[in-house]
Image (cartoon, rainbow, N blue to C red):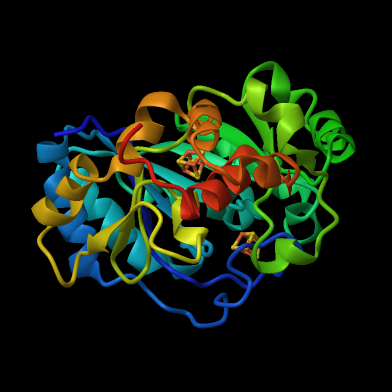
Length: 299
Ligand code: SF4
Ligand code: SF4
């Protein structure tokens, strides 16, 4: 079995914010929850997959708090570590925030989504409260900021300059999907950047969407076709679905070569010049677009 990096569950679609870059903007009001049976199937399979940490995302997971608590408890009872990606709104009042976090067993890591878009809805002081609560509770904490250009990234780093001395503040460009489709995002021409593409990406951090569809990475779920799609956990057993990564030539190639390997993928294609002239927002944007129409079997 291919060594995987982790597993990420989208446990709910709910969020009452309305960020200008939200990839899920069209489903936030559905209030859909992942079936607990799907979450349990994933958690129960983690030992066989050799995985220690489960990541929970939404929507905003803390907006469906009881659902989040049940899933945390199931993972904790199996001895798993839990990472939650959240906008941090629950820390508006520091005492309430601390109490909330105390109700979630097994949380070892919080990633706070905070950038110029999130800051319109969740204030800097609330984010700082969340950082302080995590520090007090010995929970690892970092900030992830989605930025449309280098200027925005600089602004976010400036806002959190003092925190940046002791926590990771990570910035990245959005995929041009959902609400981000309408944003003015800095793009690069593929031919100017492809030689500097990274060797590593988040492929192998398997993503399970709210309906139990399983993908080789989180951005693959945003593609319009079946790129890195492994099957549905309500239709097939976890063994069959997770085992698909061994048979998926695209997964195997990208896991080994990362986005840097896209150069060789294009070299073998007669339409490569068309792709080299295209503009993308990030490596994943290029990867999804190129991979949709390329064959990986013979590489
Ligand atoms: S907080 Fe997250 S889920 Fe909610 S609107 Fe913003 S980006 Fe979307
Ligand atoms: S570069 Fe491709 S395979 Fe890697 S995380 Fe991005 S979309 Fe997934």
